[in-house]
Image 1: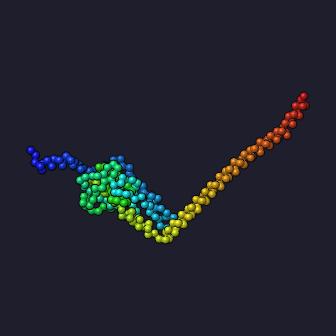
Image 2: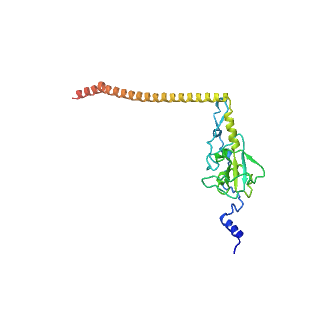
Length: 250
């Protein structure tokens, strides 16, 4: 007969499988030779910036939950993102739901790791500390660790990696709100001039369309006039001449 303690232990071994029993090792095959910074474009970060006023940072739509599926991309500008390695006993994420098991308690970082990103493939890092399973979400962080930071070593007991760019997005929001009246004036002036320019272009295009119509009509009128002149010349000159020759031959 088994004791109660042995029965409970056997049940736990069956019901709760060991998570990440083997040490995780990131493999980087077929490196493309580029990094996230190569995807960084000022057009992805800023709006405006013409006529000397300060740029306004573009902000992606806020994610509703830390469990939202990865989407879009995020580019830091003012503050770096925080990277943390975790050893978690469980994982609540799926293919269509991000993990939320990362916490300070299961962090295995020896020190705080911060770095700017030029195109992290998940814009939700600006709203939450996103938790990625090393077994399921490697496609999210592989390019960064393999190409941008190949010298970074992932601890062997790591089951999850969390990335938070919340400080950067909060700094962008504060920057946008604290722009001066002069910045807003020049922004409105730029928008007004851009609208005026578009109207002018539209008028020029309409004028060109009118010229094209006039040119087509002129061509047909000229062609018709030429046909009439040819017919008149034949009727008044050539036809009488041929008739005269015919009469003489008879």
